[in-house]
Amino acid sequence: MSDGKYRSGKYHPRYPDKYLGDINNITYRSSWEFRAFSFLDGNKNVLTWGSEIIPIPYQKPVIMGNGVSLRPARYFPDLYVEYLHVSGAIIKELIEIKPLKQTKKSRSRKTSVKLQEDFTFVVNKCKWEAAKAWCDHHGIGFRLATENEIFKMR
Image (cartoon, rainbow, N blue to C red; front, side, top):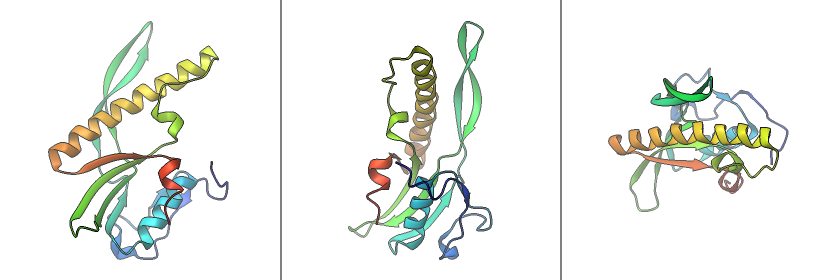
């Protein structure tokens, strides 16, 4: 569902005062991220936002020989956002942008594809569980945004 126009590159915010981090080093890695960055940058209810600015420690599954072991790693969720909710409350969230396909177990009938997609899902799930625990500890929300949410942004 990519629009094909933006695959990766540097994002240049229209409202740099809203961005947390180095405004000269904002990298989008997909057209979906570009669309989310543009939405956050231009939305008057978004107070601040940043891309890949919070490291979350997690245990990454690694295939070793005939088994899987866990290794310490760091995960940087795609977005940190603070915005004004319609209720007047300030909401803080970490948001991960992923294709819907990567948020579920594989449905492929081809064994090699199924194994790879399922392993990607397991790694992602480890990241998201760690992020959710970190967010709960810090009083921040965590959510996944797929193409279903990204393409509803205006």
